[in-house]
Image (cartoon, rainbow, N blue to C red; front, side, top):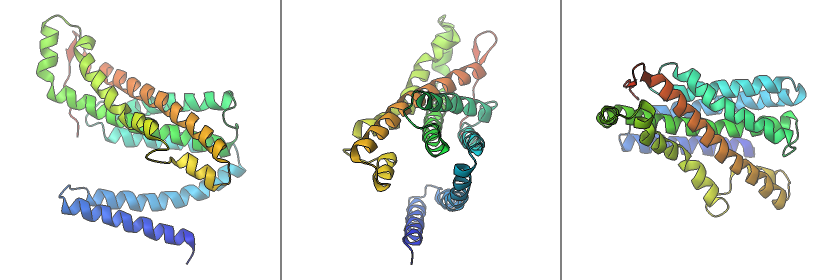
Length: 252
């Protein structure tokens, strides 16, 4: 049996364990976990073939990155409840900082301007932006649903809508940045991130792998904060109605 097949079998086993644990804890997530695992198996098989083609036909790299960004926008948008045009807003919040940072890293020579370097870099930054956008967006929408009285009180006391929403926005941004900050602070002590491990396994020196991982982690901090802040801005524009009224928006 090949090593690749053994790894797939081990991964499927862990997915089954997670689904079983979720069922035992009555979280209602067992089916979602199994579906996510099945999708990962299929998608990674397809992506592996697609990546090989992208490396041969460089123009396809733009299409591949666009698909990644669009998928991230759809995924994050699904988590943002009844926010109007949630998918479009999430896509904008994710794509602008992630692709902008990718362009900067390629322009300054931090990574080679080739599909082999650009596509993984864009993917990492898009993934981080998606996570921050989802966390910050859900936190902000939950605050809008749960703290209507506080917001209305601030409006009655003379605050404009943005000032009344500012505490909730700040909490949402902090929530969105917690994973990135924790990952950066504990890198090398608690975890060895994928970029570092992949480079070392691929034959790169530890010094080169560490330098590459460092720039990725620090870029992620900026990208995730920018994505969360942009999403918060778009949410505010959606919920602030004429006359400085704040619309209630449900979060699922």
